Structures are given as C-alpha cells and as structure tokens.
Image (tube, rainbow, N blue to C red; front, side, top):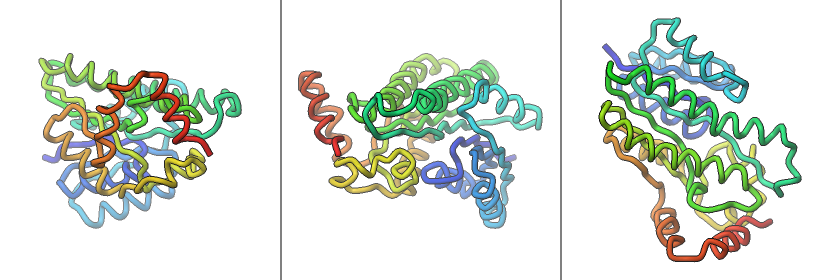
Length: 258
C-alpha cells in the first residue's frame, strides 16, 4: 500500500517538483493550490506517468481556518497522510509602509498561520499512532533581517525557528521536521513578490527548482533538521554570527535595495 504526501503550493516551482518526486517514488499525493488549471495539468501528468493516486484540492490557504478545513476534507475522504510538505507561501518587495496591510495579512496567514496549524493538526494526529515526516519550506532569508522585504524575511525566520524547536520535541514520537532553506530559485516567486527589482536577484545564481526540491526531499527522508541549498548560501548563516546585528541589517539593506 502506497504512503501519502500532502503538498501545499503544489502547482508551481518547488512544490510541483516535490510532487513529481513523491510520485516517482510510488507515493500517493494530495496537491493543494489556488490554481485549478495548473493542478489539473499536474494531476494528469503524474497520473499518466506513475501508478499512484493524485488528488487535487483547490483552496486558498491564506483564508481563515483554511488549515482545519483542508485537514477535515482529507480526513473525510479517508486519506491517512504520512508526509506533510508546507510549501505554500509568498513575499512582497518594497518599503514596509508602501505595501497595503491586507497583503501582509495574507502573507502572515499563509507563511505562518496555515503552516503552523497544519503542522499542529498532523503532529497531533500522528502522535502515539504512527511515525510521520514534515518538510517546511523556509528560505535563506530566515537567517537575517531583510529591509525591503521585512515581513517576508520575518515569516521565514519564524518557520525555521519553529521547525527546529518542534523537531526536537517530536523525537520521542518518531516524527521528523525538516526545514529546507533555498536561496533565489527559478520559480514564479520573483514575479509575484517583485523581488526581481532587487540587487540580490541580479547578482546571484538562480537555483533550479528541481535541484532544490531533490535536496529537500532527500533531507526529509533522512530526517535531517535543516538543509540549505547552495554552497555560498551555506556560508552566510555562519559568517553573520560573528558580525554585529546592526551591521548585518545594513548589509542586507544594501543587497536588497533597488
């Protein structure tokens, strides 16, 4: 009997690549995103290539109580999830006060609230009953403040710290929590966040979404805590430990400016 992976933000980029990896490894998948057309295309593609079940659920996970609604719908279908991949998220490039509050509210709801709620729901569901694996997609943005993308950087820092903390708590229950921290990656994120306007994207190599997904998938299956994609990306989180915080923020602001 195949195991089942639930993947949010599955219609594009890293989420889509992760869906393909799970299907290639004979794992049934539940794919969640807002885009019905892209989800149906992926469902058809994976279903024709692999002997797995592909269920799609069209849902805006930034809406209130979206996590509980999704959890109840999946339970109602009699599906027992073994792997949870919290990939859905977005950012926004610009000065803090130039962005409408409603945009930040949706960002925090999706990047923080829904991720945390789904993690809580499935950890409670698995605890004492079965082992489980969670992959939370954070970012190299998690390791420092990010002027011009302040809220996005803060949400990704939350994801990293939450994941590392609960990963330690869950050891006794045989539930692993892996955090994947990619740098700039070839997805639709740059277009949606307007991050292409920043020096960061102009001056660094853009990672392939498939390579990032494979790194995260392998780390999850090995039960690793945190994994960073890219050799240079691995240097920065350690280097900034030896630099005063205000210098780190100034450097980040210089990198992120237009």
